[in-house]
Amino acid sequence: MGSDARRTSVLHAVGVLIDGGVPIYVMRLARAQRDAGQRPLVACDPASHMWKMLEQDGSGIERVQWTSPRLRPVRLARSYRSLTSIIEAHQPDVLHLHSSLSGLVGRSRNNDGRSVVFQPHAWSFNALPPSARPFCRLYERRFAHRADLLICGSDDEAEEGRRAGIAVPIRTVANAVDIEEFVPIDGADRAQLRQNVLGDDADGPVVVSVGRLAAQKGPQSLLAAWGHVERKVPGARLYLVGDGPLRAELEAIAPASVHLVGKSSQPLAWHQIADLSVYPSEYDTLSLALLEALACGSPIVATRVSGAQQAVATGPESAAGRLVDIGDVEALATAIVEQLLDPENAVRTRAAARTRALLFDQRPWAKDLVNIYEELAR
Image (cartoon, rainbow, N blue to C red; front, side, top):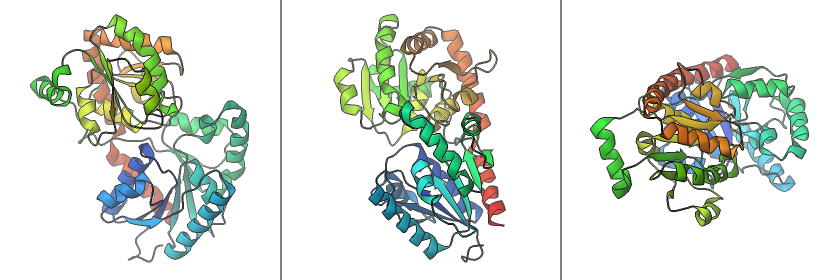
């Protein structure tokens, strides 16, 4: 056990530099641990978004400088030495490795009997070109035994791991949302919020997509589908809320009805004013932004990536939207149009969205993970 008043200590190794779901996930988890009496430590690069989040709102959460890993031998070696020094200095009870590069570094070392958790936050073999995927699957199988437990954010992600031949114990702890913060609003309150956010553009159908402007999230497919939506639903507008490497490219081809908002510190408002939320990801685990949209009662159109079926459902009594195949631009456009042109269905799916979100309440999610750490520390 940890030396800090015998509190269970957990070192989260976060190798990603960018903003997005992983830093948000770790931040929420570390706060839950702190509130439960555990000792969370977060190792991340000072240049990362994770570090900035901890600086701004990380009271009671220790942060440690870690040289983030990259797929270059020199950088991997530096990251390995840096993580080893951190572990020796802080002696955590549990090492939790978040994302593939953190897993690459953390599972390469001898952890001296310390409990190790690996969480891919979307499998590496989905992120790489098809030619590289067999190698990634082989790597995951070979190094699986270096972790005591593998945590997946959705049932689909866990099943993908099993199909890849990964034999380490896998536990699904589905990604979650704060259902008390992300809530629907209706009537005059919603109309006023739309006016505040959109000004003169408050009338007409509003489609929102919250996420990084990166290939993983599929914004190119959404823009390719949007021309058809414009023709079928005059006055519809699309708001891309987020930033990323594709922003300049998307701005160059976006028609007047598409607005690139940039990164927003208040995604809640965008979820609440959306008539429809679209998530055309190329791969994922269980999108936090998608769950937030559901919790705000927004109908969903999404691709069939890991977690989407689990979150949205497609049965006649529980459907909170529609799912389409990855990369099928025509089906994506058709689904958006059909959702926008069916007001009766919109009422049903708004109610179903909130109901689905209640299944992903953040409170039991946090309790499950806190209990897992206690089990591993013992």
